[in-house]
Amino acid sequence: MRIEIMKTLLNMKIGVSGASGHLGRATVAELVQRPGGHEVVAISRTPETITALAQGRFGDYNRPESLAEAYAGLDRLLIIPALEPGKRAAQNVAALDAAVRAGVNHFVFMSTAGARPEEEPALGASYWRGEQHLIATAPTWTILRMNYYAEGLVQQARASLDQGVLTGLAENRVAFVARGDVAAAAAGILIGDGHAGAIYNATGPERLSGAERAALIAEITGRPLAFLAITEEQLRAGLTQAGLPAEVVNIAISIQASFAAGAFDIVTGDVERRPGQAPMGGVCDSGWGRTGLRESRSDGRFAIGLSLRGGYRRNQILNPGSSK
Image (cartoon, rainbow, N blue to C red; front, side):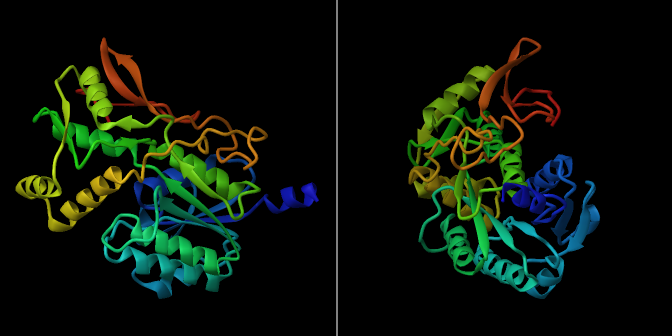
């Protein structure tokens, strides 16, 4: 039986829907490096931008008729929701329905930590609806809930250093995870065995409070930074005054509200597990996927490094003058 299962895991046609985004590109890059002779199909509104060793196909979440054709012939499919608030819930349902019509056997749905029943524009609302529709319609499925990107913390830190204040709606804890580790986890699920019906949480190794985040950034950059809890009205006013569009302001507030509600206050070993060491079979099945904000030194100055899986370049960020 095991031999037959292993045979079915070779030479699969694996699709990544939403392949032009940062996470999609990273996942495609992971897949084309993995053994097994798999054909990787990158589905995007801009397939001409696909540069990895993958087949590009056109597919647009806002044009459901394009998706069934894009998903045709796939054995497994990763669906990465788009960043379009107000549309994402309907897009998720349309993509899942198209995959069912196309005859995809195993669906992997990229969701968010803390997804639960709530109303739009709450961050988790569209992901929860997608999860429920996935469970009800997909022949075989896996859900990968990701914590908040470490790269997002870096962006917030850069925007906060000049003011000397890192703000949030309340003191909270977040287990930031590197985007590359989420991609590695997704690739491991797509090519692996034993993930049917599983819900995984891709997190970093520790929960950082607002005060701890500010202290870490201050130590690394050598610039003063403190954490300050503010009201939603203050946050909205500050973001609006900075000239951000209303939809971006709403997204930022939704994220901070999720932080305050504890949606990202969770640490698991799902990203780190290796085969044979955990009953779920190991999400990253070809080595460590350890993720975290850790200290490294560059020219005598601290930098935040994202410790990624083997083969990745170490990105040193929040280090003035460093390249992206």
